[in-house]
Length: 295
Image (cartoon, rainbow, N blue to C red; front, top):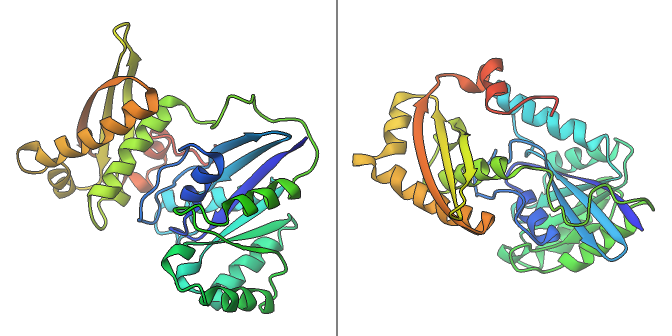
């Protein structure tokens, strides 16, 4: 059978996590329109007849401004060197720049086979696609380009077949009933962080971490989840909580519904907002919140 790991690489907000979720057929990574949504490497596992594809969804390539973003960038770099295939995800809606081509060539030079997923074709003029593909090829990027729309499902099956064909023969890396390497506790924290990213504007979501402090499944069929939402500034705490707690109550309700879908049971969710100034540049706090560089 065909089996191997695929590093999903690309700029921040190129649509990597959305594409992985569609390719795997289940939600294994959170999605928002903001950069830095994915902070850790998340494995999404596609099992089909004669093949197992392990997608390593990596943090978006983004200018490092904190210790956290620096670790995110190094996670993407290291992942690309230890796989059977690189899937470079490019936001077609934004066109193709010289910097984009240079980035593609940089990852192609790693020496690992590479394919390009040219995404978001549903929100751009179709006539732009051939010209962009031509620019990529003439720029010196010598690999196949697959225009896709993850939201509409366009081109996904063709891309999936190409990925499987590019993998070597081998044994499965995970049991067939596994779709991700992340724990339920990890995913609950990510669901909460996704809802904060979607609800709040500007810099606040980038300065938050979510720490699940309690996760228990009761005999009554209800899961009890408690979590801390950590922000960097007191005024951010006030915004997260809102007037008389209204904003926090709304985002917790928003998250609870997705947690119930994920766990398949009722969820009793409580959340607390705490301030830890400069946590994104603190090695001890990065470790406490699960952002270990060696992971």
